[in-house]
Image 1 (cartoon, rainbow, N blue to C red):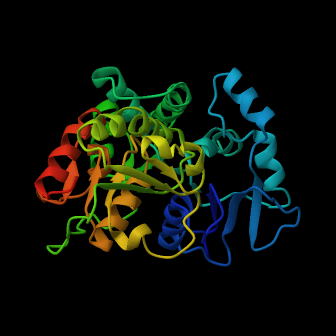
Image 2: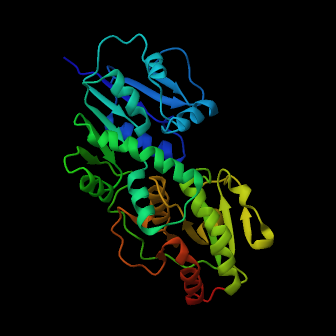
Length: 342
C-alpha cells in the first residue's frame, strides 16, 4: 500500500530567488508522488484544491498579532492550516514542514505524527553568537531571533520531530544544546565546491553586491557596509565605489558617497561581467551559502563574513577574503593596495 505524505513548502517553487531555490532543492530531494499532498505558501493563494494546494502569506495585522503574543511573525494558525487541508480524509505517514513556522499548527493537528522540520535560518545559533560576540544587528533581526529561537527549542525537545539544518556546524551546535535531538543536514549547495585557481583581481576598486536587500539579516550587513565600511575605505582609497544590485537596493543609493543602488539587475550573469570584488555581508541565513556558491562557480573575487563560508572547505585563497564585518575596511584596503587599485 502506497504511503501518503504531507509536504509543505514556505514559498512558490521554481523561482529565481534564494529562498525558492533552497525550497525547490528540498522538493527535488523529497520527489513528491501522485499520492502526496503538496502545499506551497504564496502571495496569491487559490481556493481550489489542485495538484498543489496553496496557503496564503500572513497579512500585516496577522504578523503583528503573532509578534504581540510572542510568536514568530510568519507562524501559521491552526485555523488556516485546517482550511488549507480541508477535504482530505485520514492522516499522513510522513509530514515535512518546509519551515519552522509551520510546526506549531501541524503538531496541534497531528499530535502523534512524525514531523520533519526544515530550518533555513537557525536563529538559536545566531542568538548565541550575538550574546557572546556582539556582531552587528538591528531591532528587526533581534526580534526575529527572540521569537524564532523558542520555536526551534520546541522542535528540538519534541521526540517525534526531526530538525533538518543547512550545515554540519549547525547540526553539531543543536546536538550540544539537545544531545538527544533528532536531526539531519541537508546542504543547499555542494559542500565540496572548490575555488577556481584562475580568479583575477578587478580592474578598479569596485565593491559589488548582488541579491535581495530585504531580509533582516542581509539589511544589517548592507547598512553597516554603507555606513561604516565604505566611508572608512574611501578615506584611504578615494576612488573606491560600492554598487548594489537587487530588489530594494535602490534605497541605498548615495552617489556622492560612492554608493550606487541600481535596483534589480536586468541581465543574466554578474554585474560588470564579474569585474569587481563581490561582497557577501549577510550575517545569517541559508541565502549566504547560495551567494557564495554562485561566486565560486563564476570564479570572481569576493569578500564574505565567516558565516557565509560555513559549510565549505575552501583553503586560503588570495582572492577570497573572509573577515568579520568590522574588519572589512582594513581587509579591503590591503586587497586593493596589493593589486595596485586606487
